[in-house]
Amino acid sequence: MKNQKGITLFGMALVAIVIVFAAVLVMKLVPPYIDYWAVKKVLAVMGNDPDLKGKSVQDVRNSFSKRAGIDNITSIKSGDLEITRDGGEILVEAKYRVEVPIVANITACLDFFASSKPGAETSAKP
Image 1 (cartoon, helix red, strand yellow):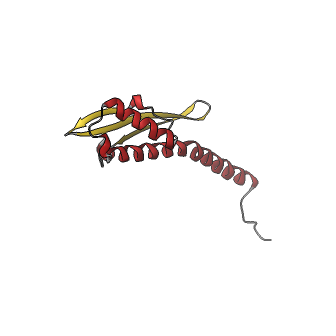
Image 2 (image 1 turned 90 degrees about the vertical axis):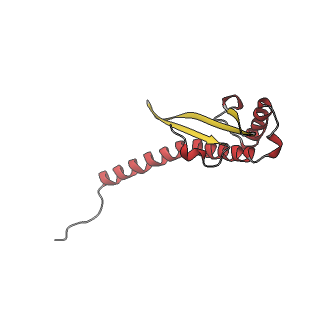
Image 3 (image 1 turned 120 degrees about the horizontal axis):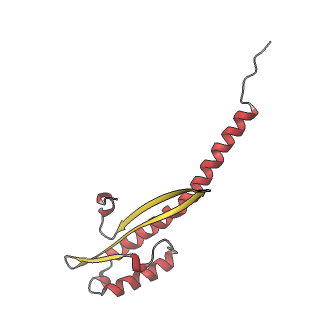
C-alpha cells in the first residue's frame, strides 16, 4: 500500500487564508507609500528650484499646492509643511502620519518624513 503525499484540504485553506491576508495588507499599505514617494519627489524638485529662493513662505506653500495637485498627493496639505530658511536656501520639510485601517479594529500607523534637503530623511529621528 502506498502512502499518499500532498496537502490536505485544511492545509490548503490555511495557506489560502494567509495569502489573502498578505494580499489585503499589501493592497492597503502600498498607496500611502506611493503618496510618500510623490511627496519626496515634489520636495526634491522644490529644493532645486532657483525660482523659490527669494520667495515668501506663502509662495512656497502655493507652489507645493500646485505640484501636489498635479501629482494627486492627498496625505498632506501645504499648511502642514514646515518651511525654514537655511543659509539663504529654503528648506521644506513634511512630517506626517497616516493611519490605515486593516481589519476591524486593527490599524497600521505609518510615520513619514520628507525634506527638500538631500539625505535629510535618513538622519531624521521619529
